[in-house]
Amino acid sequence: MLTIVSARETWAFRRDREQIVLPTLDRIIAEDDPVRLFDEVLSQVDWSAWEAQYKPGKRGQPPIHPRWIAGAILYGLFRRIRSSRRLEEACNYRLDFMWLVHGERFDYTTIANFRTRFREPLKDLFRQIGRLAMNLGLIRLCEVAFDGTRVKASNSRYRTRTAASLEKQLRALDELYEQLVSECQANDEEATRAGSPTHLPEQLAATSKRRQRVAAALEQARAADAAREKEGVDPEKNPAQVPMTDPDSRVMPNKEGGYAPNYTPTVTTDGQQGFILDCDVLSQVNESDALPESVDRIEATFGQKPETVLTDSGNSTGQNMAALEERDIEFLAPAESHQPQPGNPACRGDARQAVPEEQWAALPRNSQRKLDKSCFVYDAQADQYYCPQGRPLLYEQTKREWHNRVRRERRVYRSEDCSGCPLAAACLSGRGKRGSRTINRDQHEEVRERMAVRMAHPEARKRYNQRPRIAETPFGILKSVMGLRQFLLRGLEKVKTEWCWAATAFNIMKLVRGIGRLRAQFAEMIQST
Image (cartoon, helix red, strand yellow):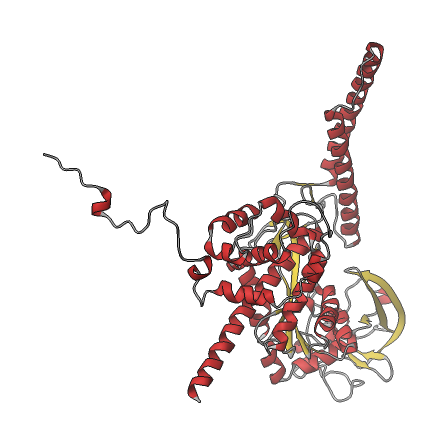
């Protein structure tokens, strides 16, 4: 005879679903759980700027304090949860989230609106967290590193259009719009005779909005093509691609390969514990011109300038070198001097003397296989160059032009006569005016030469080798740990806010671990005494 055994007699049942749970929410969360330190850090923040955006005396249920919602967003990034819907789910079912928000419940629309509403208070929160870390000795501003990366926009790589395709699309929309207007007028006349009210058809209104979007995208595509043409790129063969879903983004090379609509986020990181000191997002490929502004914002945030700034070769421009030199900040970055260096036969005691013939083959060549600029010696006192044959190149004119959106001045130096020169075939390109060689010298050449001398010292190179560790670690954590490989929001201002949320969460995570280490060291010190 088959005996049926009750499940309760076979397996352990700890608690009935109807039984009242005695432990409080606070007792369920362990004393060493990171969420407790996370909440402790948030409790040290002044939330008055956030509270000021709520209207006092509003009828109905009192609003949820912004600290709880902001804490949920920041802690969600800490736990790789970025979606508003997943945050709503976590606040309803995860004990650590429930403990953090004091059991408050808010839906995903509240979280989504909150994320973009408090832009200025969020910047203030970022500054407060940085100052708190500085007060604890976790930020020193001795050596900081500036760098940029690529993060995909909320725009499919296939949702881009050229000016030609947009013109075709706009013509089709114009025809459709005219057809709908004619039909609308005919319907209005019939409705008027019948005495019934008329309304603008939804299809006509939608077509009108679509025409406006396409027209704006077409204008943007034409402007991009004009900029390409100025840079020497033929827009007919290689036209600009305009993103349609997020027009503020730009089609750029992906870190993983290929091209897609992207943004260029930047961070400036402290070398002491890796805290992010400043963050921004650009809708352009090159972030080099953002470096001086980032340094200025750091000084405004912490009340002092960083002592040394490190960056890579892409940001090692003459403009940045001059800007940091004016601010009395040491700048370490790859730099190349065009003056002859030791080992170059053109580096000789008297520039007016010719380089010996047996050393001509060792003279450096440029990409056109002609004598490089580093074969010519500049005499600052006489303001002229000397060629390898000792002949002078005199100042001729100053050219002013735009290069990468920066106004540049080039002083042109030209040889009076290159006829009879035995190095003419290796020096002149054949397109030179009057068969003479010219050398250009921009307004930042001197500061570039000083930078090259500084970077030649072994100690400077040793310090510069710390740049990858300082500058690139935040990007690895933000992308791999927090999952920020593509923005959720659209539009440059909203994307900047999303990046600021991530940088603030990154710093709070660093601060939580830093405080934990300091308390552990203090406890060890107490026990040892």
